[in-house]
Length: 296
Image 1: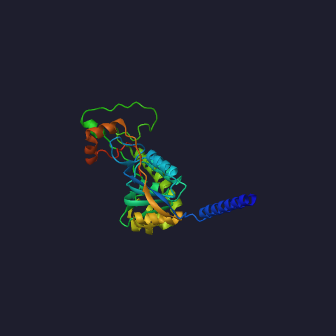
Image 2 (image 1 turned 90 degrees about the vertical axis):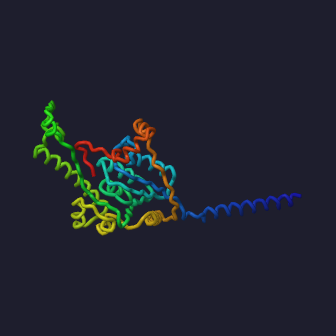
Image 3 (image 1 turned 135 degrees about the horizontal axis):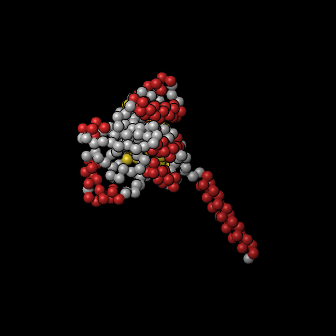
C-alpha cells in the first residue's frame, strides 16, 4: 500500500515537473517579434493654445496629452503624421521637446506641407519620411503687424501714448516705425532664425553648403529636402511604418491614438449654432496674427 502511494506521488511529481518545464520553455520561446505602433495625426497651424473657433490646429498641450496616451499604451514605436505650415516659435519648440522625450522609436511622416515650425517639431523624431511632393523647408522667421497711423490721421483721430521707456512703443500699430525700430525688430528675427538653423544643423549634421541653402528660408519639395539631408527617406505611411519596424526590430501593427482637446465656451457655442463651420469655411477660424509675435 505504501509502495502504491509512493508510485502515485512520484507520478504527480513527474507530471508537475514536465508541465513546469513546458511553461518555462514556452516563455523562453515566446514570439516577441510583433508589436504595436501608435499613429498620431498632427494637422493645422501651430499655436500656444486652441484658437477657440473650432478650427484644427496643433498645440503643446495636445501633443503632451497624446504622448501620455502613448506611454500608458506601452507602444513599441510612434509614427507622427504631420500636415502643417508652421506657427508659433515657442509652441514649436515645446512640441519638439515633447516628441523628443518619447523613449520608444519615433518617425515623422510629412504629408502635403510640413514646413517652418512643423519642420522644427519633426526634429524631435528619430527619422523623417516625406513624400517626393511634400512642401517643406522655410527655415526662417516672420514677424509682422499692421500700422494704422495714416488712417487715424485721415480720420482726424489723435493717438495719445503715455509710456515709460524709449522702446516701450516698439511695434505699435498706431505710430510710424522708425528705421531704428525696424532694425531692432529685424535683429530679433535674425537671432531667432540663427537658433533655428543651429538646431537643424545639430540634428541633421549638415554640410556648410547645405546650411547655406537652407538658411535662405526657401521651400523645398521632398526630393530636394532629401538631397539636402533634411529628411531621411521618401515615401508615405507604409515607408514610415517600415522605418519604425527597422528602428524597433518588430513587425508593427499601426493603431491610431486620438488627440483630445477640451473645447472652450466659445467653441461650444459656435459648434451648437453652426457658426464655427461657417467661420472655418471663410478662413476666419485659422491663426490670428498678434503684433510682434514671431512665427516660424
